[in-house]
Length: 538
Image 1 (cartoon, one colour):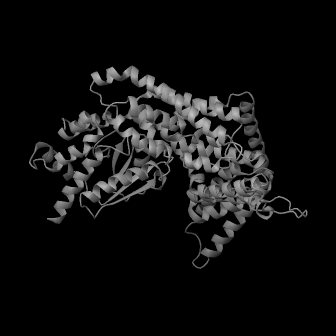
Image 2 (cartoon, one colour):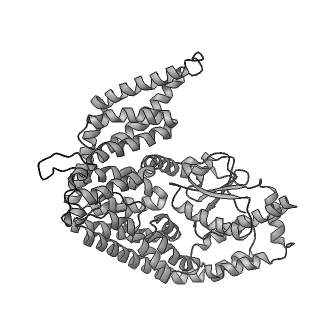
Image 3 (tube, helix red, strand yellow):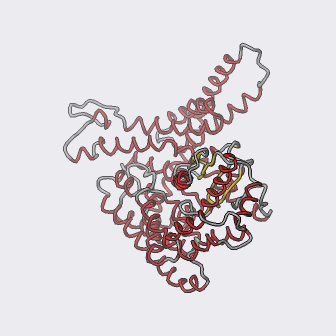
């Protein structure tokens, strides 16, 4: 098994420096998105209630008005508070603040974060999502530092008294500070950001945002961009106009599906064979991460992603379309559910147009490099993973050779060959020696940025392979990188995220893959587990 464990490899210093900035940006982006993503269900609930019950909602189109929920005046003039307003003003920001506080200082940090953020919410006339993302973690950090002042200095029996009053007093002070100091600053910042977005929309320049968004997505900053930047601004736009185009800039599945269709038609080797399955997962499942490896293996296709993204945004600007709430995951199903009633034509056209543009550009790139790829026997750059595996093994592998020559369709044949191979072959001996240097593996964790997208797919694939091998004493789960602990035997991540995972679980073995759905390293892991299982059984 080829790993990146600390015992087996040592990343060059230059490489660590080169990846340091990217890891730092990823960590900051993950922190921002980490406050929003666990609460996406609340955003969806708010979006559905808004879409159904506001005065211009879906039900109103059929003459059904429910002002007591929608929050608009009844026919007799009765003023109703409704659910829509309180949810966006209080519920969603406080959930974000609580999550941010817990990320810094567990439950105690979450409680103080909510108290402090309440001051910011009441002190501003606009929904305080940005305020919650700043005040929540800040309040929890201050609480953590305050607790350190008298840690281990409290007389027995007074711990609860000190804990409760210190948190209450600090929370009250921070709420007042938030009301008078933080809220005006965040209000001005929100107004400036909103003005900047409106300026881009007015001048028709919003499509230029794709120049930054699409490369950022491929570098696994998609969640940070969508939920850390666009969601707070978009929710504010919804509260004012009923919909927001910002929810569509990152979530549009069109650019990704266009690239994958092009690989399915014009690609070679494993890339061509695996692309059809990836299309279904990306377009209907909303897991955009699955097309990132295809872009990384053909870096020129980032141009296709950018042009496709710009086309989609341009169409949405042209038709003045938008969503009621964030579409997460970025599935076409989620997007259509959250689409405003007057935006279906524009949203659907934006997906089709962006997919068409990215498909055409990717097709041109693939056709232009096809002869070179075939001449180099480079069966789709997914084979880079195979080549890297062989390089790390120090020799050719007949099984991986099958995969490289014949594509994914021959994977079953290769595995069958693996199961019937001579146990005394040089490859088997090499693997056995390798296994001796690796501690017993009983729990495996797939980790990605959010812990619920690409890592879930990878965990499912490996779990099925382990089940077919008859191994029952190994657990395979998926988590966010930020939730990794140092009691894990084996961590599997995308190669761009391994550095962060290693920091969270320094004692674990780490395996890097470039495609969660069909990495040849899964078979090596299963082979290792089989030998481990047989050894323990003997």
